[in-house]
Image (cartoon, rainbow, N blue to C red):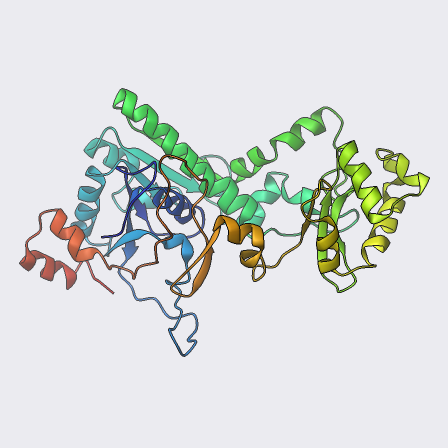
Length: 391
């Protein structure tokens, strides 16, 4: 039995296996102590690659699936549906991320589940939401953040927007929004005894993440043209710059005292830099700052600027970031079964999370969970040959 620690200990979640935001929400809840039982499809998964020593599979490298108990069910069978409903009756939260109507077609929609357990929180996450003209349309992260206005803000002046892989939409606007939503609804259910459906839309979550920029735009202090603002690469004091070795650093010297220190340490002593907020000068000043940063390697700039109030950090790759001294000191990353991954966050002083759990095999808890539901050894053996399968 895996160790469960954290502020969500005592909460049980049923997660229907899917892609992207729902698994991310399930990972966050599991990280902080919730018991998350994942209903996987009763099918075998093919390996992604074989490294020779300790092959890494699609399952083992899917860190979004960590910390789960998995039961493999073929939900086309009525008996499997009944098993799922029995698990839901014992749970606090359901998570699902299918197109609107899919769960209803399986006999596992919110009306059925809430009838079985009125205090249930039924969390749903989709790209476009459960209703609206686009609700049934296919889409991916790039489409959802495009509609939200968030993708537009990733563009440089005169250049196309740059896709941000999953971070703004699927995980920030979708998974975190779903986790927040179901915990909010659970709080209300504990007070009233009444459950409800949480409709988390990735495109709405991505729009929510852009709230500050929408406010600024309405006030006329954020330009419509991408790449011309302070914060989207338009300003010379807030951007990423190439170094002599082709690696990059970032600066965010917005406040006057930070900007003054940047000038002192980098040698930007020309009077042209005095007018920090003269936007007409930003393009020319950016070229001069870029030339200054090309004079040293990234390591040399780190030695000079890191830890100062310049507001500086090196631009690290996924291979480099886990080994940065700041992350190492805080124990931010963990390596579990050969997979390096960020550990649980945020941190709680009184109820800290347990260390990262490994990713279990599909169906690894099928027999245990069926036994918990009261099935006999003979029934379990029969079910494993039919509607439930440990793979």
